[in-house]
Length: 183
Image (cartoon, rainbow, N blue to C red; front, top):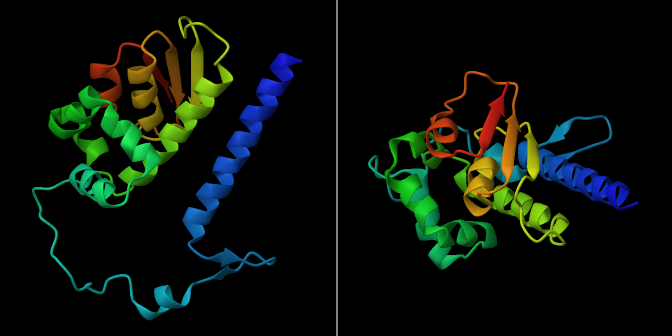
């Protein structure tokens, strides 16, 4: 019965993530016929128009902007990443992490990977250690969850699977000994 409840919780969590992903993808609402209703402000401003405001500094990456904005508007997931000092240092300074730390969706990825890790820790809370635990991440993308999880749970093994075999996986292979990737 315990395995049944764990699987049920994982499937519920996956469906919840899919719902969130669809909401981010559509940035509006979808009616019953499947047509996308675009929000008014998205209609008013063409995608290629220049926005007023401060110009972006080309030497700054997404990680810099995310860390700065988290001071003003704290986000639980980003704050958790910031508490992992060695990991943040790698994001800022390690060339293998450059692709990951430059992502336009970095804040979203940090928040989602923190949520995933929280659920995994909750499901495994009865275990005394995470040694020999094997955790699968299907459709892992760049592997944010794998990087965070392997850093926070170094005795567990993370198996990441994704369709895109051409991804930059330097961050997974060069720096983490408990991550395995399959395409």
